[in-house]
Length: 547
Image (tube, rainbow, N blue to C red):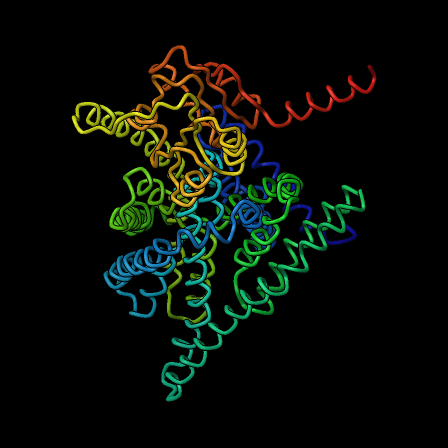
């Protein structure tokens, strides 16, 4: 060919084979992620046939990580981040320490140096951004308490890994150097200053400039220019954060999204980046598969199994115990622990750094890659089992609570509202403003406080539980309004509320035709979808004008 087409070839091979393997996985009723990983193995250098450029694939995958974290930031406010700091910061640090210790024990058992074992353990301690967010988004959990804790945990892990990536060369690259300790302290101080500088820059300068730029572009009326502005901000801030402040691409993109998330254009920005997010996220999984050498499964089965056990079992047990220790229920603990039961992009970077510093043997990198691929493969299965377990556990808790004699007296309000977020708070203001009685069920303390201040009777708890619904007076209520955005939880609430009170009028919200059909099938009388309601109101206005 007259010119280099390696980039085009990598994209075509990656997306083309991923489509075929993803379609096969869908046909076999297993997670499409398994198909994407297998596609990477097929186009990787360790299997015959098409061989894509691994280096280019990793860079394309990094774009996927940037766009995904930017999208999460759009739905994640600073208040959300600060609300989980008391569990995310100590929890993540403690979990990293446990996983690092387990990985270090395996490394020492295999005869590696202490330094190499530490790097190996660190690589096993940090979860993949893409896998965690994909799992949460697939189940509409990003904006729940469980999702906020998991994402906050992930942000802390990213910060710790940024610190590790800078300190490891100072620690292990200066062995035998008398100024090693002084150099280590200096490196740590520089890293902390850069992180503080980055956060200060984002909240002092970028918080003023970025929303202004986006609003200016939106007023231009050009959708193409708006889409370009969103991508430029996401990629530009992420790249600048990495080059200037030495933080990760993902962290920079998250903060950019969080700042724009405070504007009224956040939903439109999220929609504009969605197609590219999905495409590049697929390339991430393909890139993981490309790094995997299947021979390691035959040559080192014992170490591979132990590595996967540390990732899937060791990390999960530690995270579960920590979340429970902070007073959260078993459902939240299980969600967080399963979310973190995998490793990904940071693990590859740490493995490459360890090999480059000649402290981690190449065998360690092979085990990390094998552990990553297998843990990512198992993660959707673990999530499905966790969801089933949580439903069974909630049913048992409801039965146990129903037998108790000290149950609180039920409320007598005619209208019960579930969720006091962006939609629920508007509903509550309208009802309470007219002097009508309203009972709100909310599991977030800050939102519950806002509902109380508005004049509603508030039940703090999980609305999917029958005991909470009864406490809210659902058996005598006339209307139930479900304002939460999570389709799965809303479906469970509709089913249980309908069983308690067959005459109840149930109104729920949905984001897709599939959710509408599911909620109606479970017993909802009316389902409100924003797009349909907007179209109806606009058509009504047009008819009035024509009349």
